[in-house]
Length: 251
Ligand code: SF4
Ligand code: SF4
Image 1: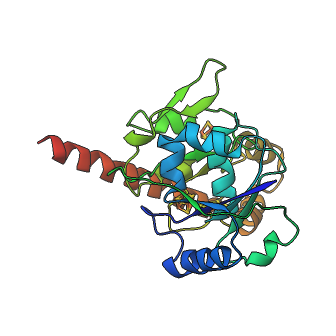
Image 2: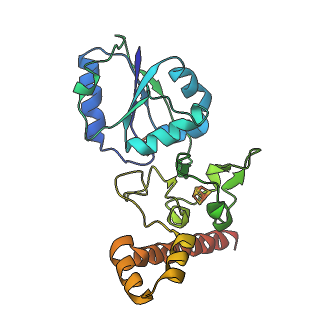
Image 3: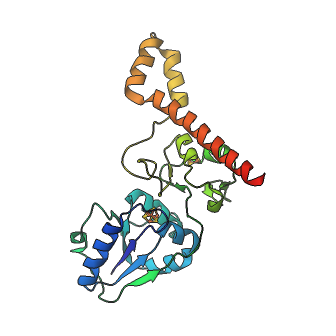
């Protein structure tokens, strides 16, 4: 049995009100039962148990922002293992036909409210990519990250994260950090990739190369190494801005 979960992104406006109301209208017209989640990011952080119970034993269909962002958010309520039966769709890019082959109960919609002042802005880790290198943890000045008992980097204190700052995502060598509410792709989990480091590997290539200049020129063309440097310097600036804001609050 499928369970439809429609997110309205109350605190982030990642989905237009029109997309949300179009979806609601169509689900209501078909009298399909669904759960309207005011803010999935917020509910994952605050109503984890309620959401976990909702999807237990079901085949949930999440409709919201970027599928990758939602999948990694939902990993938090399914012990980091999101079954293949969980599906994720971008509300603006999909239509109710995606539900045609699904078995869905008829009934009135339910709502999971999000009534906290806190805007749930925090990083979400993609554990298919994360190598637990700890770079994000060492870069963050605000104690958002920590190590769990197995030595995995986890987002321990999401509320410590600074609103609208995506700096640590730019420093991750594996592109494993998503900020679902960010306005830019791929940081929001959308298509595209941030430039990837291959530190040691590239060093080896330089050591073995007969023509380092040619190697560097090719590398610039193909790998976006210059872009990578831009990302790191942007990350430094973003982190500095957060630190200054924090200091100003204390004064
Ligand atoms: S960022 Fe995505 S998952 Fe989070 S509240 Fe907005 S739409 Fe929902
Ligand atoms: S920097 Fe990226 S790969 Fe390293 S621990 Fe953080 S999320 Fe994982």
